Amino acid sequence: MKKRVLEITTNQEIADVLAGIEHPLAAIWSQNDLIKKNIAISFDYWLEDTGIPITLTEFVEQYLAHSEYLGGVFLTGIDPS
Image (cartoon, rainbow, N blue to C red; front, side, top):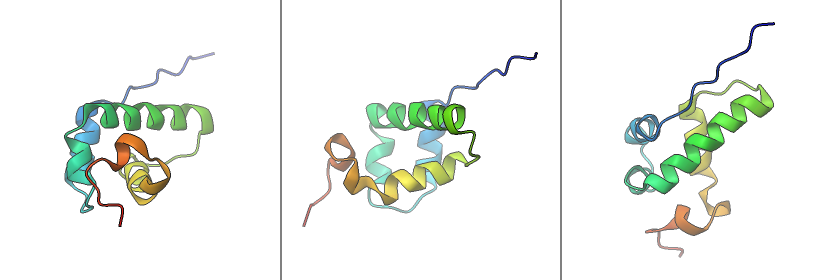
């Protein structure tokens, strides 16, 4: 049985995706290593645990679309009104 080797998503890959997305949080998140690492780890676990194919861009877009549910550091710099 051949063991599957998982690639680890990097902060730079997340930053590259964020740079190509027009969203108020994208520029803020691209400057925050904690957020980038959290998204990268979540993406890797998503692929490993679910087996449901999704691109990194689609995954990041979902994070941005639902940022209000993430709270904390994910909403830093955003006016809540």
